[in-house]
Length: 394
Image (cartoon, rainbow, N blue to C red; front, side):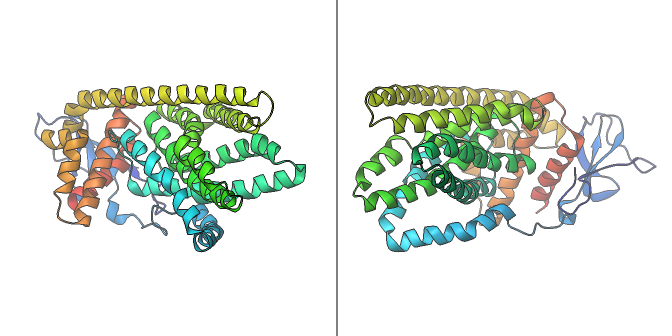
């Protein structure tokens, strides 16, 4: 693995000699390198090893802020133009389109309390869903409807395939950035990507509905009754990717999640298309009941996952504190969401809070890494240790 500067994120070279040894009772862990205080070196309990982290100060800063990427930036240019036109010509529909943020956003934040993802990563995923997935889906679905002459076919065939693939791209991008450590991360990023897409889609639907004097009915149906529809579809993809990451398997093994996401999306759109046909209301009612059951089952599953993660992190706490030279009370604070929020709130300025977030993120990810297989890849651990050290030193 390479850092953003193009240099390896860890070095595997023999330790210099003579070797200054820590105290005999020192446990295995990452400690400041006796030969260079700019890095940390792994001590195996008896000897210094060849594994060395890279000083964060030496890494080249990315060209773009972490909440942006080239795909997001390119897609944002036309997308912001369309959204700006909507805001100027019909500000009410634009504001109403933002309502799902207030409903779904807090749920995603609640899901992410045990091992919180960086806000910049969440924002990037939200923007990817809004701009990248939104723009590609708009072009593809419009072209499909024009080519077939049927908006119903576009809703049942084109929309589920294109939208779920493009929303999944946001999760894959986070995997590329090494931000996905397990199942909960996959679900959280799936939710943010789907939420971004839903907001932009709702704005466009509300704009068209207002021209047909159907704004009130459309707003109730989409923003208030079914704001979790898109997150539930994409959750299958996030679940499958999270399982693949946790089991250290290729993302290609997560194909089944994408298939379920596309299938459930197509079933939902198809039932809505049948609503006005004879007997269609019954089919739509059955599908809606099924999605309500799925929503409840998802919430129950998330609660179980959160409790399991909290319990496991508590079990790992002594090992984490010893391995990374963290005071036990500080490590315990990072593992408790309420204590972590209180400590962050007491910090004097935004820089201190940013460093605190970096340290908390590194500790949580190191814990997740150890939870997977008890060790973790040296290069991945070294990168997280570098983040932890940089946050402490700043």
